[in-house]
Length: 78
Image (cartoon, rainbow, N blue to C red; front, side, top):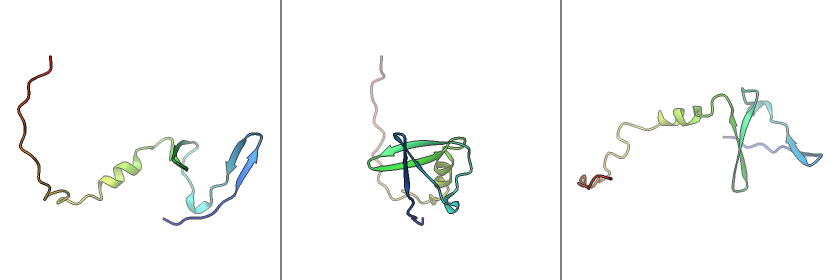
């Protein structure tokens, strides 16, 4: 992923940025999520697309050699 530097416009107590054409979001609005000092912009109408696409990157042998303990028998909840 390429990084670009853009300026922040301060206007009347809020901030605005112009997203470069190379990072264009194909939607008419976004979700904004703050994580630490970073902001994430997520397309409003298809927020799960990145998750679904990332699942395709797992190979069939993912965690194949992971040792899994045997299943435990437990009492049922009341």
